Image 1 (cartoon, helix red, strand yellow):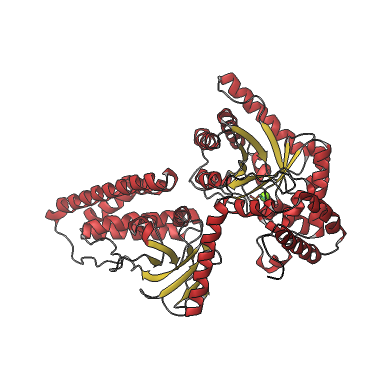
Image 2 (cartoon, rainbow, N blue to C red; image 1 turned 180 degrees about the vertical axis):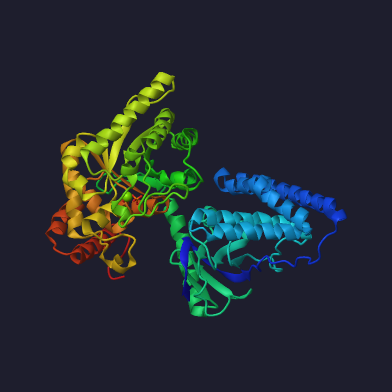
Amino acid sequence: MIQGLPASDGIAIGKAFVLPNWEWEMPEQLIGVGDLALEFERLYEGVKRSKHEIHKLKTEMDETVGAEESGIFAAHLAILDDPVFMNEIKGIIQRQYKAAEVAVKEAIDHFVTMFDLLDDEYMKERALDIKDVGNRLLKHLLGVPEISLPLDAQPFILVVRELTPSQLIHLKPEMVLGIVTMVGSPTSHSAIMSRAFGIPLVMGVEGKLPAPIETGDLLIVDGRSGYVHINPSAETVIRYSELRQRETETRERLQQLALVPSVTPDGMTIELAANISSIKELDAAIGNGAHGVGLFRTEFLYMDRSRFPSEEEQFEVYRQAAEKLQGKPLTIRTLDIGGDKQLDYFDLPEEDNPFLGYRAIRFSLNRKDLFKVQLRAILRASVFGNVQLMYPLIASVEEVREANALLEEARLELVAEGVACQEKIRTGIMIEVPAAVAIAELLAEEVSFFSIGTNDLIQFTLAVDRMNEHIGHMYEPFHPAVLRMLKTVVAAAKRHGVQVNICGEMAGDVRSMPIWLGLGIHELSISAQSILSVKETMLRTNAQESRFLMDELFAYRTAKEIRERLERFHAEEAIAQGHIRPGI
Ligand code: PEP
Ligand code: MG
């Protein structure tokens, strides 16, 4: 067994199909002066065929997955129209008397080497695009066939050095059970597409393989943990088959709860909303019965492109999301860039402690020009649904006031321009900095709701970097300090009639349900995949008993005691509601 980077969830079991590298034989000899016109003609014909093919793929993808993913093919078309790329090819033909395919190959190598040398993930991705589209052009010039699928036409696990989006499309997603790549990052276009297709993907296994994977090898790909088993034992196959079967059954069973209200047996409701990073996640959220969106991480809208998104582009996305939700709340968090979330096209300063640095609301308040664009887009979308606004990483009252002043300025501008927007958009803040907890009373007077971002709040409360694997075991949601932080925020909010929601990962951990019930949280915002299992837990957890349990939890001195008590409580509630029979 080896471990790579988990990039798309799920378990795949099947035979490997190792995609050969596209390395073709190139003619050696030079062309004569008289053949120049012919070579140009061949080149144009190849470009024409490639474009035709890309258009077709783009249309197919628009219909199956959506315009967001098919954008990659628009980028490929742009490369074929790019005078710099095309002039490089033509120059090689004209000045060096080389055949069109040789010129294309040399141009690809030239640009790929140039982009690869840059220490910039975005440019490396562009190098992959050039390779991808260049290979398509080469294929037409050389008249070689498409990648041939395994002869038996059985679905397979694709093993490839570096996956390109058009390879994925060519291989027909329904044929691909899972994917293993030698290199690549989970933020690449192909990883994004694999997730959209629901294909388990493990990346970056190069250097970990004891021997190369061969076509026909039996593989198990576990996209959640990043494990890949090569020619596993019969017991391992049975274990994973059972696991996969259980995952399917659980999904089917839980699906029946989608329309069931999220209420405890003794009548307490906590709304279950979804965290999303893009509009395409909305369908899954709505399908799982989400009460709305409690956290729209808008930074991904900024990350998946080569420049800041315009007001119009943002407005379109927010409007569509608001409309799709049909009156259910859409909580748009303003840009939370910095820390581990960087923009390829905008150089944030190098920082020793980026999580404590120039990020989130700090960036927005420093770049009010960009911030205003986002606020205007949100305000404009506010008339198309139930839109609320949320600022990340708030640490002071001044920050809220400054952001709100800009919001009002943006609103007045829109009014003056005669553009429709809500007069009073509901505005809240993320509570994720200990300072915000300490002044929760003061902040509560400025906003309509709090959303506790436990991911950051835990790391800052415990001084444990959430990205550092050496101290990962110290990142403890059930630390007594964290419980006290939560209690302080809720108490302050209640005194001021401010609603409190939770939107960090801790909200999706079913063990914490009695904490939310005991504290009286209004809404949990979690990934679409967790909504149903959290609801199932809520349906069998008694709110009154949860309140009693809180007193006990606050008496414990260690995280271990709290965790164990919660686990016991969880089991006891399951038994009490007849989900588990004692002794089993
Ligand atoms: C959080 O910090 O809990 C949160 C939801 O924000 P993010 O994970 O995007 O930092
Ligand atoms: Mg956060």
